[in-house]
Image 1 (cartoon, rainbow, N blue to C red):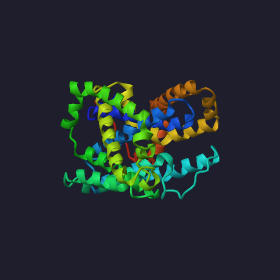
Image 2 (image 1 turned 120 degrees about the vertical axis):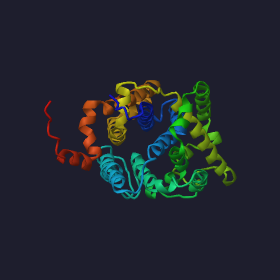
Image 3 (image 1 turned 180 degrees about the vertical axis):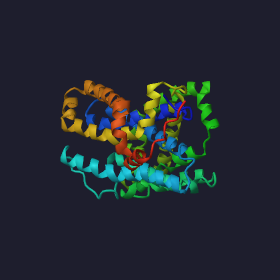
Image 4 (image 1 turned 45 degrees about the horizontal axis):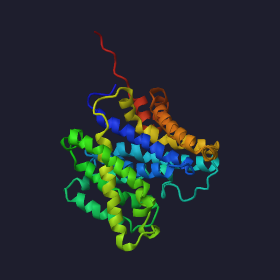
Length: 340
């Protein structure tokens, strides 16, 4: 059961978004299947902006005090230091992928979000000083494409910054408007329109722009319009994020809502399963059975998400996502029982 202090809508949103993360990463197994590129572009046009927005919204209370800095180390820094090499060497040894690059300095695959979120949190007290940081973050994002480096994923730190800052400044009363009837009615055609845009991504943009990690020099778009294209991608991402979130139920959905508190477990462990499936030959199967392969991949991604967030699996894996916090909890003396 979700504690009364938690907003069930936010947990529902987090669960939907992390499911899309797993689906998006799984699509890499079925690149040869018909429709996979469209689905990939449709998801990536808005689901990363939505996840970053939620991360910013949940970071409002962060300050440079000992308790929160300790929490930052426990929940982001330590998991990054542990899982970055774990997934790196798993991919090399088990999946036989030729991954390269220095550990920790250049985040690999899914691990980028941990270090970027850590850096966003560290600058949160500054970003909260004045609302002018919101329009300034848009300028920073547009300029971020001038960077061409994988070090600490600085291009993503800069490129996705407006969504994080927007999350810092919007209040519950603002998000309550997502439940307005007209907003929810407009959300469906908005997402349909984004779906149509995703069919022609390579004619008006480039898929690489959806990742916010590629420098403009790597993108085959004329210098005169690449900034405008980046801004268009950002606007589409914002509209899609709010449209999708408006369709998420506000009420508690029971176990599904509770699973929304296990997003870190899902995020850290789903990559190992996806790469194991790849090593077992799933891409070859989907090449021979395109439609079936894509459908099974999507259904398998949803099942994997629900499995990792299920209470039994979560109880086993959660200590690995925050080992120091778990050890502290184990050492903390339990209160003595009181008599009736």
